[in-house]
Image (tube, rainbow, N blue to C red; front, side, top):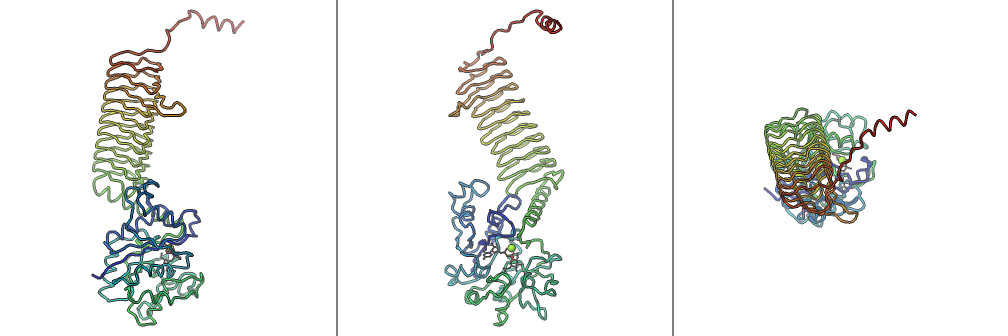
Length: 476
Ligand code: UD1
Ligand code: MG
């Protein structure tokens, strides 16, 4: 096969999105739409990958490019920067033809072909592109356009054929009423032999409604020169959905979600209501796991086998080992849950929370930068922050780690087997020794040695007859 070079157009503003964010960074099913395009390109093992950027180019570069910058942004892209993608700047943006022309210094002297992808066409599959490439080479074409028949062709360039052969592409805005009836649309994805390409791009004109250099005009220009132009017709337009509006963005997200849910169900995951289950593409879920309605699994979350996630739960970048139960309405972000642990309902696990095997975190409990050891329990109304808690510890209802002194955060350590009575405040830094007890209602300011009982509330005093005297007074 001749060399394959991929060029992705991503310089446009995306005016129809009415957004401050560059269009290609809008998220489809959780990932920026251009991420899908790059992943699809990766599967083809191209010789080079070039992204044409322009509008807010730095944010697009950062989201895809330099590893350190990607890490600073956080999110799903942080783990894999793309140092090997070349960025070309198109400023100002004068149309798709002009955008491709900007890659001339990089690719004009290269051999082989260019696969031109659009940053706003995220649902394309690599297998489709492989077929496009094969068809192009079999026909020894100068250009092959990927097309589909769409009952709702609105907004797309229309494929004009004469005698069955592709003769030109007309944009919606420039089309006659008769041309608007055409249902075969341009996907915005093409394969070009490099040899004649750049010279032809330099010949494009701007005689159209938008005054831009239209890449699709290349087709008519090729035809005039009797170059071999092919159309590769897809059976369905679904994959080539181009995203120009927020409504199309939502449509693409629906497709991505549906695909992911189907994949998981086929692999043995129960999804009770796929319509309301939002699982992002990079999430993994083990078989026999049951997911109830209204669950969101995001980022790089990994869910083990035989887990149960109840309704209304949101889990971001977290790991659930096997047999974990998350009861209703929990929010987890950056948490790690050991096998057989039970969380919720109504628990909030913030970054760097680690819950050991068979441990329980109950209702209205918040964890942050806290390890709760195997078999330990914090079942009610508790805040545990910056704490290291051993195994088989019982944290009573209403326990609070007072980890912040107004300037700095301090650590709490609770050793194995300790028992913290209800309504305890642990003023950090503090250490509760192995097997120690803290009596209810204590404010613990000093370390408690192993095996000791700490009590800090004053001695109780009962005042006999107080209530009657008080009531008597009132009725006088
Ligand atoms: C384009 C095609 C249309 C096709 C449709 C498929 C043109 C003129 N029209 O229309 O035939 O049916 O895609 O989705 O090509 N871009 C740049 N620089 C620019 C302009 C655009 O890099 O100067 C990028 C955009 O960021 C986007 C892509 O090119 O990723 C397509 O541009 P867009 O404005 O969305 O074109 P469409 O109107 O969708
Ligand atoms: Mg578009």
